[in-house]
Image (cartoon, rainbow over all chains, first blue to last red; front, side, top):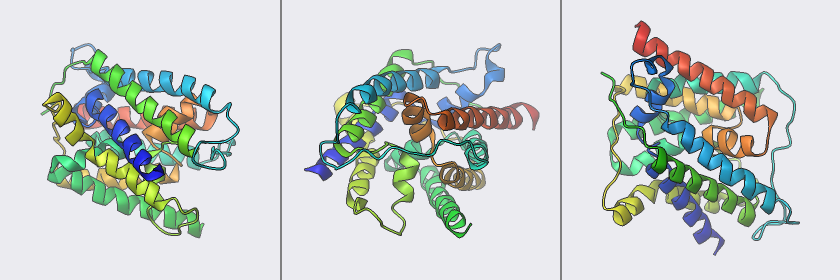
Length: 141
Length: 143
């Protein structure tokens, strides 16, 4: 039951990404291209995706987190880290360069896999190696 | 060449709301943050919490989503990938490493973190936007 539910949640998440146009790297890159605002090539769609997602999540989390526990688990697993360390800047800085180069972030890249484009496979394969390397480096440090 | 894309306010708002709905569902049912990079990196060992199959189920849904949209809507939005293989490989390495090093990506920090008013996520999102915008500027307007 729980597994089926998590499949449906993934399906909902991915459908949102597809509908929002976020599985199209060109759309993401055209959002990031702020220099194109005066020339009309800018695509502000991504800002609305984030706005729609945050509006629902902000209100939803407020309601859900009033519960004592989740429906199919014992506790809520919320990140406890609060301090601003170097990693919270360095990681996203590296991430942003990769995002700006190809226009893919992890969710949309995975969703793009089923489109059978070689490009998505190349990106995801490299992404898995990068993730493994970061986890290895973090555990070794 | 840069591919022009159309501004899609309604589809993007609805798509965003669906992403939010999925995040709220994962929280109410499993008590987990819907962060894609966090879910993917936990496919690697060590397996501490017995949630591996659930993560696989979520990712299967994520990957299968275009088939559902194509079935329901009869068509899929256009997809244009202009990056060449070497660029895609480099970008994938950077995105994967950076997401895990910074404890989250667009979904974990951008959607869930900002919704929880997390200062760490705000710093992460602003940093990502900063370097991503600079990278696109450099690639499209400098070289």
